[in-house]
Amino acid sequence: MLAVTTAVASGSRSPTHLDPDLSWAPPSSAWPLGCGEAGVDLLALVAHATQRGVVLAASVALVGFVVGCPLGAVAGLARGGLERAVSRACDLVQAFPTFLLALVVLSAVRTPTRSHLAAVFLLTAWAPFTRLALAQTRVLRDAAFIEAARALGGGRARVVLRHLLPNLLGVVAVQLGSTAAAIVVSEAALAFVGFGTRDGISLGSVLDQGVSAMLRAPHVLFVGAAGVFLTSVALMIAGRAFDPSIAPGRRGH
Amino acid sequence: MRRFARVAGRIGEAALVVLALATLVFLALRILPGDPAALVLGDQASEAERAVINAKLHLDEPMWMQYARFVGGLATLDLGESVRRPGVSAVARVLDAIGPTASLAAVAVVLGAILGVGASVLGAGPWLGSRRGWIDRAATALAATPLLAFAPVLTFALAARLRVVPLPGDPEAGAAGLLFASGLLSLPLAAHVARVSRAALDDLGRAQFLGVARAKGASYARVLWMHALPAAIGPIVTVLGTQLGALLGGAVVLERLFERRGLGTLILEAYASRDLPVLEAAVVFSGALFVGAQQLAAAAHAAVDPRVRS
Image (cartoon, rainbow over all chains, first blue to last red; front, side, top):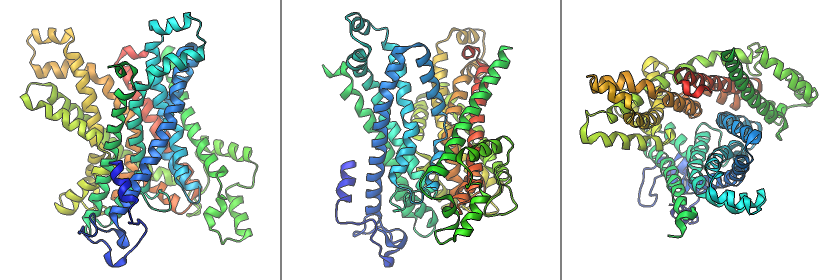
């Protein structure tokens, strides 16, 4: 799916080329998905929007993963106060209304860009990874091989890096897909309500056009909805694919 | 005494989250590049005009004084006047908009709980026979579909084509409009509730007290309603609590879609007209509403299930 959008996006079609004569034109052989407002080529727009949305979501999810996973593991091993503090922090952050904060940050800057979006999403993206890593560490920390590693004189950093993290990754990586999918949807929702980036290249703005032209050109609406749905489902499936490829337990088979 | 401490702890926690949100909002509007006065007035404004706005919004004071004023304003519900509608306080505009959003969300939660629990009972009971699997599959598919994708399509089908519900933006929409909008909002909620309560019911299906009730001659439906569901209510309340954030975001999207009045529309309006005091007030109040509802869900869970009170 990613490959298809990339191939189309890198083709000669431009999402900013406008042709007013073709405004709201229905799908045809030259424009497979039809045209939107002021004759924008929907196929190009959707392809570019999907690509940028996925890149944004995947990078935010990856950074959240890289930050959250070791944090949860360390907190789980340390037990006591640190474990409680990190666990409470996760609860609080997951309860945080990110959507509202995104609205404010995007209205405070004059020209919202994707890096602003990424920064807002990052504020809360680490929490699910930390929570999962913490839960998994609680299970693993009393396992015999961790105890053995400690008894052999492995320092805390060594135990975390060499023994604990490899066993966490598979479980936590599955969360990558659903976090990325949630971010793609939030980004589209923000663009839909008018808080997108200035270039207007987002699945949400396709939907926005579709809703405003619901009676005249319903195909725009269907293209936008299908774009959001397919991207989010594709990311979830991609996340699930992480499971067996990383989990060390299954690698040997 | 311990109950009192628990309530105090919950209130303190909620206040902490609201304060964190308010502080981030405060900082975002003041530290991020982009002079607020220029945002309000546009680039062509003269120095004198900017000075007036700066004085009105207290932007000429040192940062810590602005912050103290802001937090004090939160406590006394006075966040200044709306820039765009002089004479109307920002908080008054927010309170005006809370009603429609709260009713939208409340109807959605009720509908979601009824639909979800109903679906899970149908799925767990013997009535549908081999077709029970359909309910599970429908719930999984619905939970994976973003509201943003299906709400516009359903609106198109039902409002523009079949004309069974009012069109978006129809000022006469009234109760039908509210019901349709919250129905859309409740669908993902219902799917999550259905999955969780189905899992809880299956879990309980192996519990002994249900067998006892069945052996005493109670019908299957009676066992489900009288014995199993009360025991499964905890996870259901919890999932409702965790879905509140999605509900809030969904409410903003749906208000935009149907051009309904409400907090979401107010935030968008304040954003478009750069009405900073209203924007601050609207976001902080929505956050408070959200956190309050979440703590209520946690408290309700603790009230019905003694196991989580530790």
